[in-house]
Image 1 (cartoon, one colour):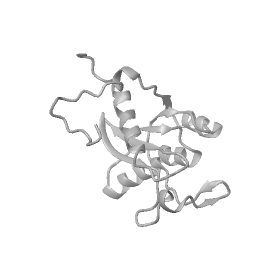
Image 2: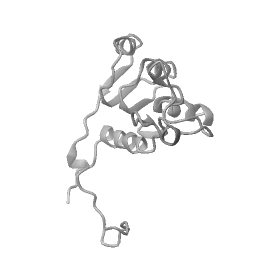
Image 3: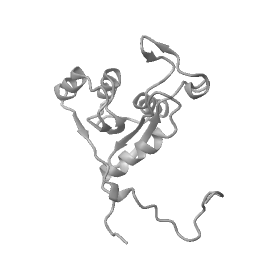
Image 4: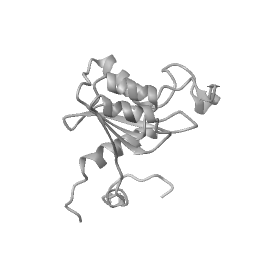
Length: 163
């Protein structure tokens, strides 16, 4: 049994990965977790507006190479904060993929000071420059397999009927 705890960056990134599993986008599954003072204040994943059809049900609605039905995970997390009146100033975000330019601008304007991402994804040069210009930072997080290879279940833990 290990006594080493999962580092905060790995823990919060794992939350973003978990959120990505709820994505209704068939092109890219993205999750985002907003954190302030080592506390999760919001989460989001990419998908349709609540009440609209989902891409997994009716395919993507693509215009000029972009699905216009999908709200990005970062936007959904920011909008959750706005809807609930949760301040985002000086917070940080953990996102499974480097944010697009529009999301980067929204995150910075909302006061996010650190963008942590798991995977490079069409990293926009202007977004990278803008992050530096406003005094924020971007940090790639690498998940260490030692924290994710074992699922420690007790003998009385629930398992699926197929196991």
